[in-house]
Image (cartoon, rainbow, N blue to C red; front, top):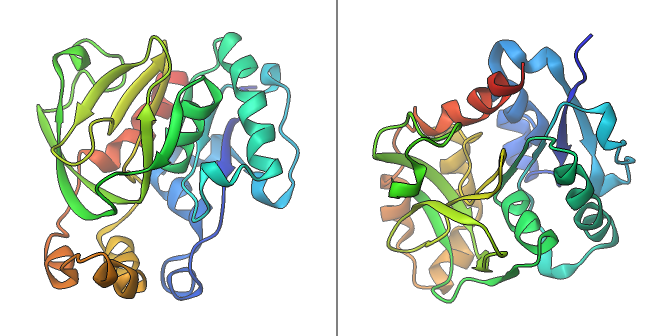
Length: 237
């Protein structure tokens, strides 16, 4: 019997979004499609124990509303756990918070983005380093992604390779090690989820000078991005 894919839930969503679209783990299970039955959810932020690396086939780390720089005890425990998992060759995909946590765990620096918040649907262009990558090498040169973040990987760990970026975020897709990736955007978001996040964050976005109407108008389908989570799982199964 195959070892489970560990889906680490790093937080919950807003009540209104949860009522309309379900909670975070549902989005990842939906994104896994027919492979969802291989996943095991671990709510790390609620104190669920992290399993031994030898008991899992892969790890997916979700986004969260809290910040890696808050250094919550459960988050720091994950940061200490991850290098051992990676050393055993377990594939890892970090999403938004998960991407930043990988940066922190492996010796990089995380902090607030110097240009503020990136929220809406944006283009990300692959770098030449992405060609031949086992996860991202078969994608078109540019893809649309849903993004919602105010922190970022300010300095990558030694040996990390940038696979995708745009004019706002230079570290949108990073390979941290063989079969270990992070994405600063949200491949698990649907268009509805993205719009609801913009609406929930509208007041804070306006304070930053973000045009909320333009952010809402930016939301379009992201079919290539939405394939990433299932594609990651199919590499293991």
